[in-house]
Length: 503
Image (spheres, rainbow, N blue to C red):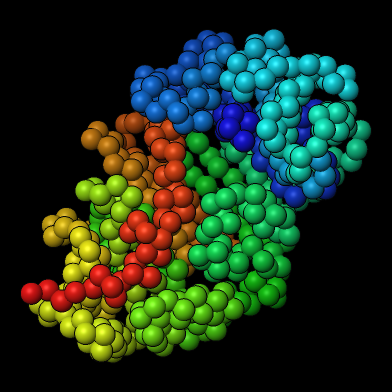
């Protein structure tokens, strides 16, 4: 997707004409308020787009990132900074389409041709450039970037673009639910995604496909009878907020499933999670019902096929969970591609679980050392510590002796996990200003997210863009964890081979 995908990130609220071009059968649509986004990020100087020094520095330091390339080219893209832009997902010629209003089409042609490595030519009356899976088409002062659903001749792709740009077909504005979402007041980014199209949209992502294979639990949301999902993002200097609603009937299979599975949140689980973890994920479950889910049954079957460790009765251990099942992950600072990890959960029988694990390890000839109530093993370059604190069962897999405090001591984080039945927290570490992001479901229908920084005087919107630009290529879990680099899957599959008692 390269430049095409990221063009949408900083292009905001277009006029009615662009909105009317979006077909009624779209499975999802997102609107972006360009003028508000640019202004709140401090990227406007008069009628020019400029990069603040902090953002420019990040862009210079990470010039291979597609997002950084976009920011570098942004002043030369010829965008109409007084108009919205849209991205929508389709089912016909294009799987994904971006519509942007232009102020200077000539600048857009020149910049896109240089960056993408192609040339514009007249096809079906449109200025078109077809590179890879993407068609770039300019009609008057409108830029369309479409990712084709399958390989085709440029003329066919251009015909599809011409149909869209003519906006003669029934538009998404006839969908009351989608229109209300797009016109939500006071937010810069608004999205509506049809439930039945959610999985189709996500399946276009390599990251999602890999995650869904390793974590079938995602299917609870993507393979359900949810009507739609809406998301509203409010960008501000003080902080960024996200409001998400899952639209489904009270008696839907989705609602019945989660009501029978989810348990009450409990922030005390953070007493076992070091405050240095880059990512913390939690799902609060009733273990006895949790293990009955078909997605969990799939995971248990996969686990049972692992050599040695697959012999442990994981189902009976998961059945004792009553509340948060929490994972903390942090990049190993000493070995590239390795991860430090902590698992923690509220269990109805924490001591019994510890004894089961200990008995299993002893049966495999891996007797642990017992020190200050913790069972300690050596695993490769890390120590594994298994214990219980305030009723929370935990397993720490760290390559260092922990001296830092716990996430429980971070009040905003503790409050977040105390109110989220399902939640994710992430943080970026910076010498001057740390960034924090959380997103969680307060109940089965309503989710909220926040981005904020450790410096209340900083521009949170700008800091968010800087954080996104700092992400290196292949930095996501799925891309790095090939089963041999210390990620979750390699821990599961090779633990017994590397597990040794401490002497």
